[in-house]
Length: 369
Image 1 (spheres, rainbow, N blue to C red):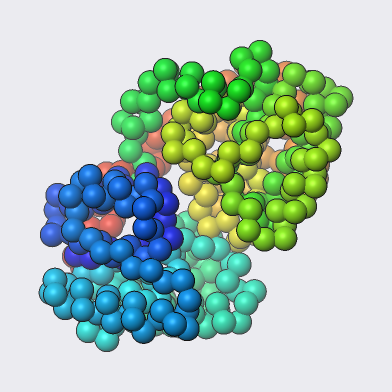
Image 2: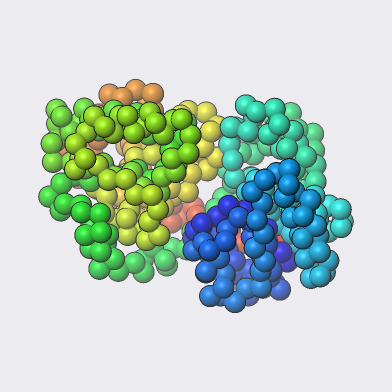
């Protein structure tokens, strides 16, 4: 069994899966572009055999990296390959197809953004053809993968991400205090959290607009936290421009926080409102926030569309309407009993729906059938 994974700094979900798979299979890992990451350090700590390959230039590095993968698969007499994320899936599935590896599993993590670029659509079709099994992580991704793709109809299985529930119970309160001090958060302030990449369809700019209105007209004692952000495209300039309308003490930008669950527990409210449609493939942050018992405002996208109900286990807003977001913030702050009940319902819903046992039952069926 070889997992091929690209461009991961840290992933609790993959760590939980690999811990179990290591017990049941002779596991090896091929990492691509994850050198010196927390994820690589975790693999070393767990003593899982692996190699790390650099794939920075698609023209120069493609053949050398592909050959390295082929040789590693041959060396380990590989019977099952499971690929995660874009570069790993393309390279890993080409290599395993050329060697006629019996099981070539591909987990699709992305939404419809690849549909907007012709070259990406072509890559999707190549990957669909090469894989023997395709795992869709949500109903939306299952639909996007099967729609107008004749290669995928008999290959696809829906398997939600699984979450280690014990891990969410094991975080110490002292960790929360450490995070509070680390980012100069204030106990008597209303902390609104966002954990998201800075890409246009995540609607971070709309959240900032709503926060500006909320702070100015409703609660001056509030702080906005933007965490685990990546600022790589032109949209980030829009976000920074909007943040400049605030005092620097009114917000915190956190590029990467490894103690992510403690960070969630520092929030009085968590907001995740991607654009409507199929941009959000799943949204692990939906489930992480629900299992962290944080009141939430979501848009009806990703996995939230499948499992959440308005004012039952989240507050659904219109992600394109700033005042709809403001109304959600006011609802949670003013109606604390309702807000607390919503967070409690969300916790039990996520706990029931996303346990690791169910995930592994379906995953192992894919490997063995």
